[in-house]
Length: 380
Ligand code: TRH
Image (tube, rainbow, N blue to C red; front, side, top):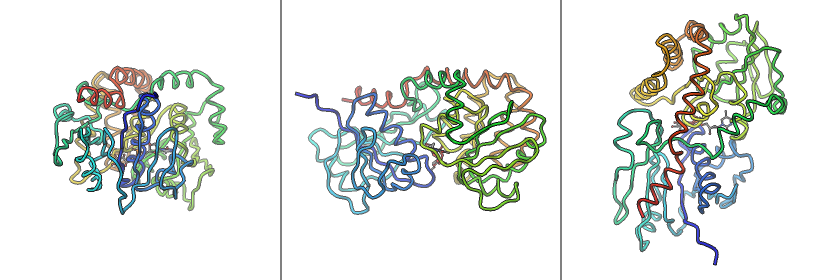
């Protein structure tokens, strides 16, 4: 008889942007591919999902994608059995009928809230703790993180080997870039830019256009394009557009599938990323990065920024730590970044080495999918 697979349900409400679906889609695929689990991913907004995964049929109530059963999370819930493991991503509220189905199971399921990523120390104390209870069903906190004692980061098996192989082979990189019609000038540095609106961008573009080294800036379609348009003095920027100003070439890219976005990060010398998932992927790229953190009420995101900078810069020399920290702080307060960029440049070799070392250090921890499975195995 074939072995019955443990069933996992992951619930995702798309609050805004792509991080919620980006993280849950990545996790769902990994649980299927590496842990042979039967995973249903319940999503309330298939249009956002389609941007990362163009194969999604936005009208399908149920569909299979890469071994994951993708279910439209309907406004009017249709009754369904609860799975053995239930993940509510980012504190989303489960349908009450589903909660009743969880409570009706002979053995209650393991119910976890997968939280947002933070480098703050308190996360270690809270990871894995019981949260609320619904009837007989106990909910647990599950926190991703950068330090031992947290749930770790999403990292697929063999990711770093694939990344290194790609970065070592010129041909693969050229082929990838040409596929997106990217033809950088000889000796140009490649930078990717994925960010929220940012008034500090103009100062960065000013300084890059005036540098002696040519820069090819790749900007996926998205929220930062308005700032790029203002600086270029053009309107209606769209994928495929290329504009040159001094030493700077700006190219707008289409929003690509998640796997291609990884390759874009691997191809670049420096990556400006945002939110949660692209931020983690840029760390796995092993290249220096700039993080535009997701804004939160009462500026609590700034505590998260500082907590990460403290960890990330710990083993850097003081001047390099000050340079990269200054750049990140200015970028996240929409201040001019030109001087910080020039200061960062002075420590380039150290920052490059550090990016790889940080990536290897992070990879020593169990990845988030494995940590979730381990949590379940110790719980049963
Ligand atoms: O889109 P985001 O700003 O998402 C944010 C954050 O997750 C934030 O914490 C959360 O609270 C908020 O959403 C609701 O940034 P993030 O997390 O990097 O997600 C972007 C996803 O899009 C990521 O999975 C990478 C993917 N992506 C592509 O697949 N192709 C692309 O071309 C680009 C630029 C991104």
